Every structure is written in structure tokens, then in C-alpha cells.
Length: 385
Image (cartoon, rainbow, N blue to C red; front, side, top):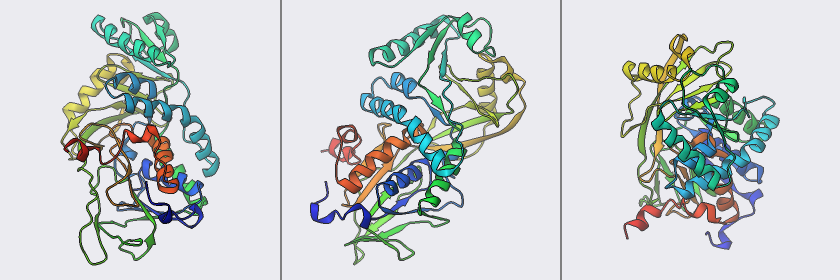
């Protein structure tokens, strides 16, 4: 926690957010809502040009809660994020004057084989144990709810509180909301060096009381003191995880729900249907592997046959920002006044409003909630002590 003397009132705080992905933009909006003067910097020429624009936009709070059974703190964060997303979506749409395709349809978890029935039952049991709504379904029941599903499936469940958005629209609307709130978004500005001291000076000469690092998989800036001495932030390097995605033409009568299997998902949007995604840890190239893309199509078609013949619009690769323990880094770094909002791996869109809350509480109020304490950015140094 910062000393009381170093915490100006929020109305006099100037905060720089480095990174214009969904985490950085959501955090900037929350900081601005709480009264701070905020400027967002990003090296790219477009909002969310890193992992955010390549996201499927799934808000899988229950699915992630169950799948990440050994990550109870992360599951709690995901659950909190899922609970506040409807209000966050409404606020962004109201402030921006446009929709983000927030879908309340829920998500289906499908078992294709008897072995996968056990996997799906594990998810259902975990959800029930944690008070999350789940509806077990037979294969015919699922087929009635989602007619695009294949015959011969072995059942599954509906997760009614798992939702989705169009990630590209979220970025656009967040940008519009920030503009209407007077937040400057400076694109094409690579921040590779920040001078710290009584304030933080950006390469363009502007000064701030606080800095929030939300660079995704990007390189973190170097921090130096007024006389050039390096200021260590104590953060580990990002762990890149490459993910490849297939985008198909959306057809009339196509899937309405997000559909999960053990090794593929289908996320239908108004403008396309997404099938994803690979998880290639340690890779940070953006090359498309046609074999991997066709494998995604094959797996998707096994649960929704229309995937086999739908026309391909495009395919892409993105780099998810991971951490050594696959949990995000949220909170103050080793440099007082510099905060991390990093390492959200495959759940950046889901966790954006919750991360924004936690960062704003710390950066403005100096408060670290119990929920945030598990994501201390300096926990890796502590583990090595």
C-alpha cells in the first residue's frame, strides 16, 4: 500500500495506462469513472491489436471455474467477473451509444464419447459444489435446444451464466466510451522507457502520478530514475501462448450457443462463427498452420456438422499473455505507483471488468482486497525466497 502522503485525491490523479487491449481500456474507463485523469498509450495503430482483437469473446465464468479446479483464486476471480459483466456491458453500451453483442444464451458443454461423459460430469459437479447454476441434459434435450448439434452425442449440460460478446465490438465501444469521457488514447506511441521519481515521465514528456502496465504479451517498458539508474519492477517476462482460430461464414439456422467440447469450442457471432483454438505454449509467431486450422474444423464438425461445409472467411493466430502459474498479475509492482494488469492468458475479455476494479481500488484508494491479494505481481519473487 502506498503511504498516505503519496495518495492525491482521485480528481487530481493523472494515470497513464500502457496498453490499449481490453484489459487496458476497461481499466482506463474504471479509473476515469472514479475521477482520475487518464491517458492510454499503445504502440499499435488500432485498439486491441494484440490478443484482444483475436479473442473469441467468451465469458466462460462457470466453464473456467470448473476447468481450473486447482486454481481456486482464479476461479473466484472468474466468478466475480461473470457476475459483474452484465452491468459492465450495459454501462459500456450506454456510454458508447452502441452494442457489443452481449449474448445471454448460455454455453453448452458437449460429451462426444462415453469417456467425455465423465469429464463433463466433473464440470457439472464442480459447478454445483460452488453454487454455480448448471443444467445436465440428455443428448435429445441438447438437440432440441441446439438443433445444429450432431446425432449420436452422449449428453452434456447447459451453463446458463456463461455468456459471450463480440470482442471487436467491445474494443470499439470501449474506445468510444473513453473518448466521450475525455480519456486520451495515444496510438502508435511505443513506450519503451519511463523516467520515475516524484512523477512518471513518458517519452512524449507528459507526466503522471501512476502508471498501469497492461501490455498483454508485449514487452514491458524500462523504468529509470531521474539520474538514469534502473528501477526494477520485479515482474517476470510474459509467457507467450500461441492460439490459432478459424472464422467461418455464419449461416441462417447456425449455432446460437457457445459450444464447448474437451478440445474445441464454437462461438457464433452475428458476422461469423469462430472455431478455436490451439494452445501452443512458448510460441510467439503469427504464422497460420493449415493443418492445425483444418483440425479445428474437423473437431468442430464432429459436434456441429455444418462446420464441415461452412465457407472460411479467415483464420488467424494470436499470442496470449501467460505467466509462470497461468494466473494474472494484478496490483502494485516493486516500483511504488506502478501497477500491473498483466498475464490474463485466455481470459482477458472475461476478466477485464474485474481486473479494472481491482487495479482502480489499489491505484486510487491504496486498498488491496482479499480477491486481489492472490494475484500479487511480486508473488514469483516471494516463491523464490
